[in-house]
Image (cartoon, rainbow, N blue to C red):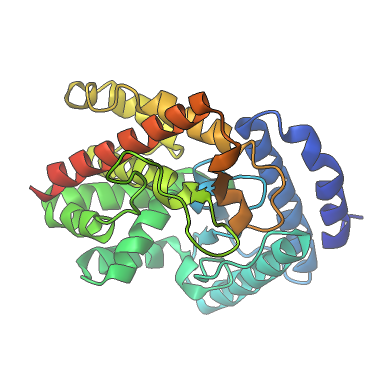
Length: 318
């Protein structure tokens, strides 16, 4: 009978066999997390599952863009709203979060986990919460909306998530100011290219001489494409799938011409960071180890990402 400890051992023994591509690595992470869910449900078996539910992951996992090490970002949507169900699914969420932690997925520093009542609700309460978030002006809830839009079902009915995401899409059609508030939330990105055209690396600390791919490279692409997806009602999860859908729209063909190849290159580059000891390590690239051609390529990706970000911000905030 599997336990969190045996899943951890299985994960550590087999992950090296799934490092040939980002796709296989993310499929492996899905397998591990579903094993954790199975054990968590078994530990709850003194109480039968009270109603249908969807367990989702979000963040890089939701977008199928996880690296070697990933932290937790997940939530629950269940069908029937009552006190008994709320207690059951919060307890399940706590068990899932604990299990993932034991297996090697660090707790989310922002508490975006099924153990948090904010991320574990009935579908009716999720609908109400999304409406409250969209009518709120705070920075935090604009971030929550973005995080939720990346939600991907790992267990249960995926249509529950589509139903909720459609609420966001329909709301912004009637209230264009929502997109402006989300855009303002992501307006500033870390500068990647210096005034002389040089790659801006970390100047101090343990990552001196490295570039933070998460903040200088991934975020400009991910945030921009997500924002356009909300605007156009694109419900695909991964940045690549969203790009493919958006690139078919006449108004974005020129803007997104090289984005897919750039983003796939970024993912390939991150797959070379295999000596990571913790979650932060997976985001840092040692520029000194790049060849001249590799530096030119990553510089192009960084410049294009900043250009895309600036264009989308101008489009939404005009």
